[in-house]
Length: 372
Ligand SMILES: NC(=O)c1ccc[n+]([C@@H]2O[C@H](COP(=O)([O-])OP(=O)(O)OC[C@H]3O[C@@H](n4cnc5c(N)ncnc54)[C@H](O)[C@@H]3O)[C@@H](O)[C@H]2O)c1
Image (cartoon, rainbow, N blue to C red; front, top):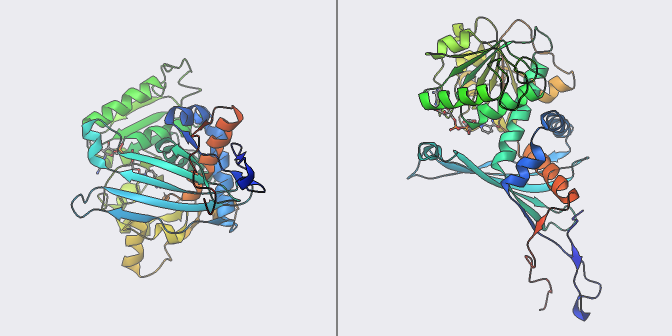
């Protein structure tokens, strides 16, 4: 229900439906609602994957808007509807402009529109780069947990690509109970690697205790930090490998690098040559979504002409239908589902509404009488 509706007054409005309210939720409010709630949000993301697996969502293909004159940029529309306990419809509209980073702006920017279930009226517009990074990191932390339950829990994590998403994933891993003896870092940009190491030290991942006063060893996951000179070194020295680059096509192609059978969170989707996937066990968030847009699983499908290389979805693992192998490389390639953005966005909306802090735009919907 929309808590900011009011009823139109005056004779012409007699018997009329409530006038829908419309709120704008800026990034500071979004961050306040989500910060420090890694465990709760990861559970919400798990519940949403389960609703999706049980057919209680609508999640059409994402629509990619691309520009012939700016080939590295894109804006993606993710419409979705979540039923069950979440109950919300809406749309995420997210831009990726990689050149922003050199200009000092984050690559991605986004808004999320939530729609009222009863009237269809948009009820809020939320800053959504934080929501998107949060749901991506919660999904990665959930997958890391569930895909390693059949093996010894990794203690050496490696971040391949160290931008904002890598930072959120590290925060979610440590916020959901992971601690690491070693954190490996590799990025083609020395500045990015240095910035990420600064974040790691501040969060206590170097074992020195972070700026937030939490002990590195207990709260923030901490052993040593190593910046690697080569991709090979990073992969070989990590049992949990996180890919969060902006690579548009595979740049890691030697299956032998994975001989130690790590678990790989392939969040950036296009880093691994199909041969590596074919030598691994593969899990995705949604098969139809993930086998599109030249992702590595899509390339593997093209190469083999089929989908036999897929072992299942994360929901198959959550519900116990499939057990991930303990002795093979496991690759999780999440396309990123709009239903997750909606679930996290609704969580934020409800928290801000409960606190009485919704910034409602008066008279946003103005033409409400059919004949004037
Ligand atoms: N699957 C999902 O649900 C999902 C959701 C959100 C973001 N993403 C993806 O996560 C990725 C990272 O996003 P971000 O916001 O952190 O971007 P970012 O620009 O902040 O960081 C990307 C980093 O990758 C580095 N990089 C680029 N190519 C590299 C390579 N070949 N080897 C090593 N490092 C390389 C860059 O130098 C940069 O530091 C993007 O590809 C984005 O599309 C996926």
